[in-house]
Image 1 (spheres, helix red, strand yellow):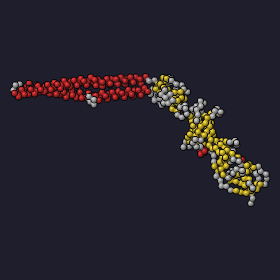
Image 2 (cartoon, helix red, strand yellow; image 1 turned 120 degrees about the vertical axis):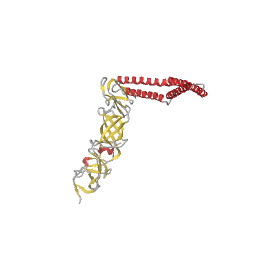
Image 3 (cartoon, one colour; image 1 turned 60 degrees about the vertical axis):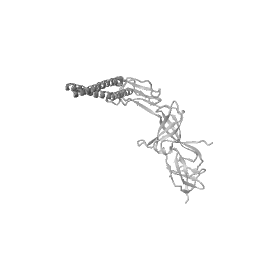
Image 4 (cartoon, one colour; image 1 turned 180 degrees about the vertical axis):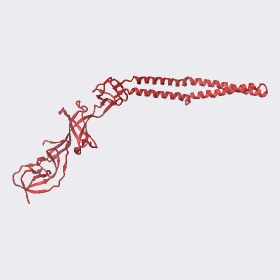
Length: 390
């Protein structure tokens, strides 16, 4: 089996040279060395350097200012979702929470007092006044009849009437007081509102306390700890960085002139610069849709297909991306291009001819033949001495 040939591409550009095929007859005037073109398999590789990045990285920031009291985990340790990563001094927040809880207890007791005691007392008072009012109403009716019969004087009638009016007023007031203590009544609603406000106060205080406890939002590894116990931290400052450990990628900046060679799913090989023997298989997972105007590059991301212990965040790695794999291809050395016109070669047939060809650079010193030559053709060094046939 013919050994497969690998053509490596750096970050330089690759161009296609489209030239019309024109045959010009020449004759050989001295002996020349020829190269017989044969089809061979080639593997075209795009090489680049990149950095290892995790699938997900989360920076944990403080929302409040305070002194760091505890850092339960060290850099490099595994953490689970909701594990406490840092605790910030919360003495003031805890005091505020206790005060809010006391206020809630008092509000709930006031509401419970209405439901259990005050409502019963108001109902009993209302019933007593109603009985007294009804009794006074009967007495007044009797006095009115006796007054009309001349049995009592007007003063006694007016006294009975005044007492009745007073009881009626007391009844209206007692009824209003009782109604206010019923559900949907103003007094009950006021007490219920006080409870709800106190509950919101406790919730706010609890949220404030929670801000003093920094938890991990995911399972992963602590890769960065920005501060130490005892340091004062301000809102917005990073405390730690947590990364996922089950999936990593490699990010590359590829020259925009080589992007046409890339496509999603192309296989690649990745290895650390310090450990060239430790390779990992990868595939092209993403190609950015925009060019970095400052560098003239496009970011490409490779997905690593396996996980290895030596793969860590920000590790510098080398990559070989297989951009083309041809079973049969014609490749000619750069030195066989005709000097006067580097898109032509000297073709040996019955006569020596200048043959225009369509080529693609697949390395610094080699070109892939796209058009103009076929297997079995013999090409000559460009310094062969020829004469044009008129």
